[in-house]
Length: 430
Ligand SMILES: [Mg+2]
Image (cartoon, rainbow, N blue to C red; front, side):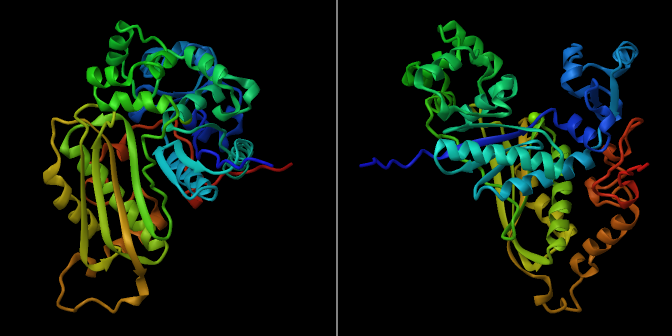
């Protein structure tokens, strides 16, 4: 007789290795095996490094102008950041991962949490399949960490990157409890996802040095000293899933643009800028699939790992289903703007569209309606940017004049090979 036990659901984090550098390498294979760095806006600082550049001890955030002479002498190749390319490859990866799961959280430009079902062996096999597919169909190398909670999945992901024998996939279910304890003992408490430097110092003061120490600490004591947020981290280390996936899958029923920022934004102006970009992208996606949306949701959140975590969320309905970015942007600002507090640091902002109908199912708008949607600004934007490039025309703060991101200095920028016909990769045959 066999005992049937439903396996605990697995949470996998799929994370692209050295993402920006890997994107650059897809269309420029000469960069393969070389030390490569990607620079921030205006070619300021190093924001991504290949493994080879890390080995040369090039620091993250090093100002390029002060290290360029020496770095170049060591063969380091610098690239300007090409967010259009990275964003497009990110979106393609998100779409591909969506085929393997019904539950997905796009955590950042190069990381998604996905839920996988099956026995541990099946889940590991799926992860390997995902890894092969992302490499083959998109060209990106990814690592997959699998566990029963997000926090453990993050730790597994680190393992998948550091132990070559794992070949990019680490499923903690494959380890015995003793082995797991050894692994967690080797991880400093400050390296656990969600434990900041200050909290780590206090934990060390309490004799909690490693991830294993935190897992085995008294939950009540941790809660009374640090609050429920840190207690949740402790429970997550025990394998309990306490941080539900924020599902952000862009499918036919919902379109979402949402990202965590590595550097928090705190001014209302920056938030408006982000919102305007997201509403434009969401509207473009909507028009691409030939839908109109009736509902929109927008939110801005501070770090969930901070005690004073807040999320400002608003849901609003359009008078008529729409695909117009002007209308969406105005509605988003009008609804969310007043809630924003400039003293807070927001790490995540999102816009989602819901309740779709086909765009051809609605009669022409009232001829007396002077609503901007009547001018079909979205369609005009699409037509112009498709012909002349995304830099030609933009809307509001997401437009060109006020957004330095589009006018910045980028001396070493690669072609936008996946979004512009004129910049396609050229293959020379001989
Ligand atoms: Mg990564």
